[in-house]
Amino acid sequence: MDIERKLDLILRDPTEEVITRDELRSLLETNDCPIAYDGFEPSGLAHLGSGVLRAIKLQDMLDAGVRFKLLVADWFGWINGKMGGDLEALKIAGLYLVEAWHACGVNTKKVDVVWTSAMVDNQQYWQRVIQVAKATTVERALRCSTIMGRKEGEMQYTAQLLYPLMQAADPFELGVDICQLGMDQRKATMLTREVGEKLGWGKPVCVHHHLLAGLQGARMGSDIIEAKMSKSVKGSAIFIHDSEEEIKDKMSKAFCEPKLVEGNPVLEICRYIIFRKKSEFSIERPSKFGGTVEYHSYNDLEKDYRDGKVHPMDLKNSVSISLNEVLQPMREHFIAGSQRELYEKVKSRVTR
Image (cartoon, rainbow, N blue to C red; front, side, top):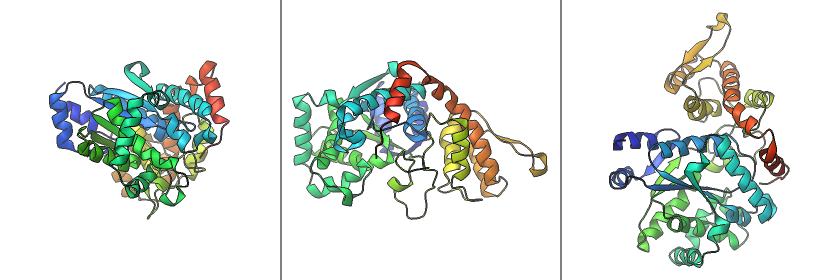
């Protein structure tokens, strides 16, 4: 595969930012099989953003010849008070999360699954964390605290300061060339690059993917945490386990102003999920309202919606139908056996 094709795969939606593109190109020109990682707190059920979108981007990386490490950040969830701060519950949630990624299309045999709880047994890891801490001011660590999904003012415990320092050390402990995380983790990845350069460890390329908007919509003035799809915000997320009826109900209540494209969660689902999973998307409507129309590119759909040629309710109804088709095999994956048991255990725990 030539370099341009690899770049196309890495840069395609949902990638939003690369730091830097020149460094990425140079990496691909000098390394046939670079290593990337993404990390995630195991803290609840997978939704479109944490499950499907993440799997789509991971597959792009694999198709581009990138080796991938998935970090199940159970200790990070412990620090962040997820699953009640219960490490055993976090382990179960981690096992569920790996199964959820598999259900979403990740070939888990082709990725390395790494657990923070295994990394912390290594004295060298903690030496790296201390080195990062010595190269980082307290003020900078506090500014990075938003990567936990919390505002600076919500920081209460000293342990929370360890979170960004550990995350900045992870890429070097994992030996990766690319940090492939969401835009909400940007402060940590920038810290990684800065301390890596200071300490002579090098600096990984950062490939940040878009965060799927919550169904409440990205209102004017909302920050990245408030706007994203989140399991902890009621009515914000569509989960990979949601039934056809649940999808339809949530979609009917989703923010979707006529002709408004920016911050429209229904259009985001089209762009980042449906058009990545399906080759075409149909708007079904009665003939007196224009009849059924098929779209083969998101740009065409967006233009028609902006021009008022597609009604919000018609869009919502059609997205519900397509999304149900996308999620059907994922729901079936958790119908029985150990997968069902993991799902039920995680579902029973309430977390923030």
